[in-house]
Length: 182
Image 1 (tube, rainbow, N blue to C red):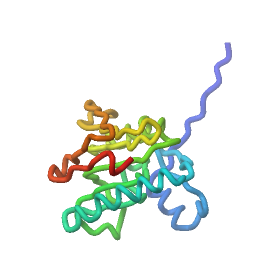
Image 2: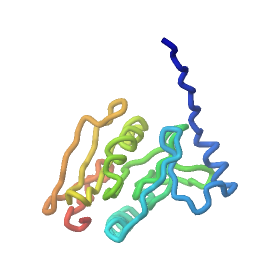
Image 3: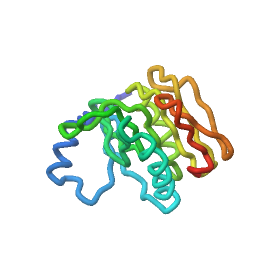
Image 4: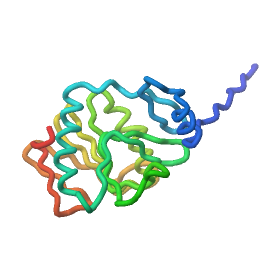
């Protein structure tokens, strides 16, 4: 029996990805670097963009002077991943020299990307120690909350439906009504 050697594929590093992006290599492409691979991002439809707008209007004014609210921007999660969550709450700081490596809260709005958000992105955020990861699940009309990261997964998963409120771990004084998001 002849065995074929499977070629080893070298992952693209975040620093290489950032340099290529700065040179215009991915112009007009919606990509994220996830575990060393370039992954296409789904087109953003009206329900998705409207939900991101609602989240921004809830979080930005409430956290002025306490944290930075980043909308659909890069997160330097690890040396082979640079996801672009729909909303990220970051510690105060100056990020002009690089993308943030810490997040107080990461939120993905999910319609067609639910499998990716529950899978590869959840693993990346858990490995990076994001203590609070939310998926605004537009398909099932719930907010899925993932907490207590261990290795590549979260040990605490909760679902919040319309009528419920969700409170970010880092800001216990901020109750977010699910009705206001969905």
